[in-house]
Image 1 (tube, rainbow, N blue to C red):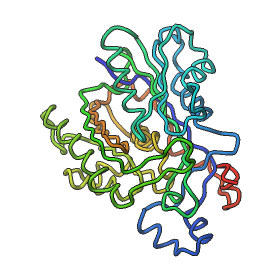
Image 2: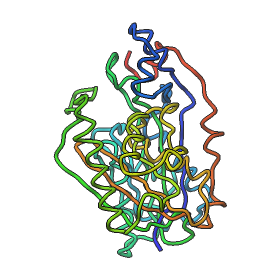
Image 3: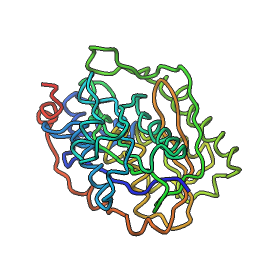
Image 4: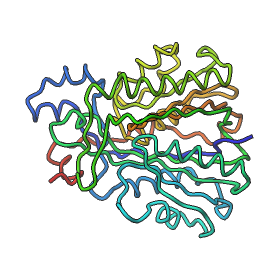
Length: 339
């Protein structure tokens, strides 16, 4: 058996409402909400970045794990790492007290950098290189003021301890689908990302997830009704529902994962945050489909099976998320260091 042994997550307590942003720019906020399905989003504090949030989620993931000397891989997936040159993975491992005999690197692939790192970790454990590996997805999303991304770009972090023993989620199989489709990008030295607008939809997000999932279902001989939950990357609230329905999944199967309406799109952490949300409810033996998406472009899809160990490692997602404090637009600009 191979899979996920434990998980952790971090959601900043600060929130800004879509209404607050829209009113600054003279927009009708109900129309914005209707278009994106985002009512509010998380904002990391001025003293937080992707690395500090990674420490919080990783600490939760390792809270019941006292064999840190057996962790031989530490990977950090992000598109907002605190340094352009200097790995965040080694700093994270140092903060966590992981012994120095490990392989570490940071990964980039827009919003699916972390799921690529998860696949790498599975491979290294299967090869015998490591008994356990830590993967963290963490982003402090920032967008140019008055850009549509300003309503969705959010902050958060998710971490997984991966191994062969005491699994909470068993990996059944996975599949990846990639192409050169630049729908979202940021050049070196440019602060804010650019995007292809509507081009980000059909030829990018929807096409790659569709191909990844269909190939995985064919590979595993599974069908949508076989799954209790389906989780998709959430750039907004509309896209994951549309792709789910087009693939044959029901509202019931995706409902517990749809958290972007009140958390926004925390990039690498977004889809994985939906996954940890459903773990609050998942039961032994149930199958979960998870599919990430990263601009540029690609999708990694996984089939997981819930084990009996989940009940002993479950975290109260809703309770933690409900701890929030709303901020105004000027504070939002300050916290993201836009001004």
